[in-house]
Amino acid sequence: MNPKVSVIIPAYNTEAYIAKAIKSALEQTLKDIEVIMVDDGSSDKTVEVAKSFTDQRLKIVNQQNLGVSAARNRALKAAQGEWIAVLDSDDWYDPERLEKLVLLADETNADMIADDLYLIKDGATSPWSTLIEESGEHIDKILQIDIVSFVETDVYGKPGLHLGLSKPIFKRKFLIQHGILYDETVSIAEDFWLDMKCLINGARFFLVPKPYYFYRSRPGSLVYKSPLLRLNQYCKATNSFMQQEVVKNNPALMRALSYNLAVYKKNLAYSQVVEPIKQGKWLNALTQMRKNPSFFYDFLSRFNNIIKRRIQYYMMGNKSVFDISYNLQRKRKTSN
Image (cartoon, rainbow, N blue to C red; front, top):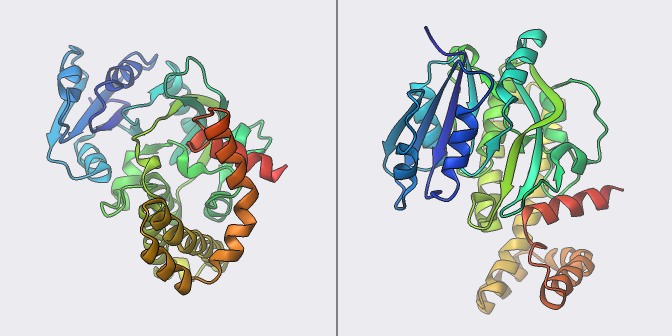
């Protein structure tokens, strides 16, 4: 008999975190599960740590280093559960998470359902906030999310729910029926685009305003990669999605995506100047300034925040001013 939930864990060089992730999955109050960890060619002891678990519900799959999306797809193809739950290898679940979400998914006839996220810094003993709290939104009941609001509330650098960071559980039958897999050309924000594929195919998506997922922010994770890489991928993925006929036939969605794309491009133009400056490549920076004359206006609009962060980092010793938690806090303050 197939398990109720397949928990899929892509892992790459996370020997310090993988045990906590696997343990949190195996210790769920919902026992009818399988856990599939796909090691994406780790060079550390990630696999060795995983193999120390003797629970027969844990399956370990090895592949060469192909990226997080390829690892997730490998796990999806191996999964047998009625529901698919994604768990990043440096995050963990509350013990009741799967039991609560599956029950609510059945009650709402959901195709995908997400909870709030606890936001916790690496090394901290308790979360500093939650995703919904930082959005500034007041949500006190289960909320259905449509594709337009999903896009409109997840704008780069702007306040909003940012549900692209959430970790829904998915009805596996729905994913199979519509041939939905992760885009293996995307290694950052891959969750956002999988959610978009589901929503454009009519998925019923619900948000539960209670946190059961612990989202760890740490140096070295993909969210800390160069903004140039992130923004180039965002632009490419958005352009690709906008070429679909079903998207073109939805004017509200096209407007939302067009706005997002404009924001990505503006930030990309800014980063194309700033990144070479950080690297001491002044000629490259000057070339990009000539190509992007709007850089100077954009720089002036950000100047106060830049100075504040530098003061906090260098003079006050606040080493977190450039991490994801600081940015979420700043977004919320901007919206107040």
